[in-house]
Image (cartoon, rainbow over all chains, first blue to last red; front, side, top):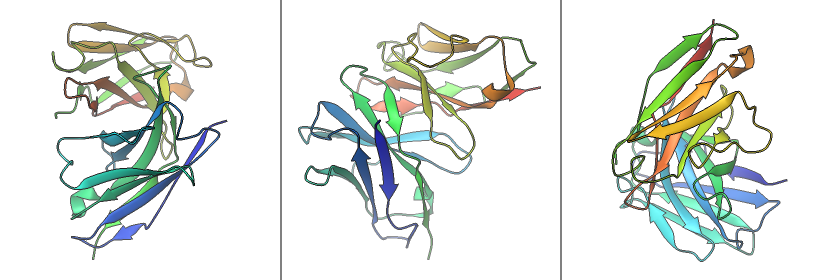
Length: 120
Length: 110
């Protein structure tokens, strides 16, 4: 069974950097899958942040691309998210999610999500 | 990129059918079959219930069905049950090689 688990600081200061890790078990991030980060502001909708392919190629939401970096650590089977220059508007629950080549277009496994609050 | 547009809330009585719409543009829903739907209960992660516009993953109830016409995708829940009370989100691939979600629809079972 595939399991994704997000981890990282729950509180980040304004203008600081948000850093999260998604630990994957039951699948290898080196397989032909895409690994995405999605966030959800309290009481609101989902926002796709970006994705990384097993090759290391990335794609980002145009509204965030200047501030975001997604990377992978194949030795630890982890995918990471860095979001720079954060503001209160970046306060959200952050999810990591998988998309496979078999079911391209479907985020079939999600982590439980982690709440990150931007506040001084 | 703009979020896909969904009705904020829909309600129905047990046993009834309801339909949720998701409107995009020619740059997303209108041009691709990579449309999916997710169910989210409070405090939980989204769960995939529809992919490729109409396909259900194994284990998802056949009470969930979906379609697409033009720039609008639709999700129908038949035989509404109390457990269907949740938020529902659509998602689509876009012409910019990115993904976009809808704002979500809250379904209430009366």
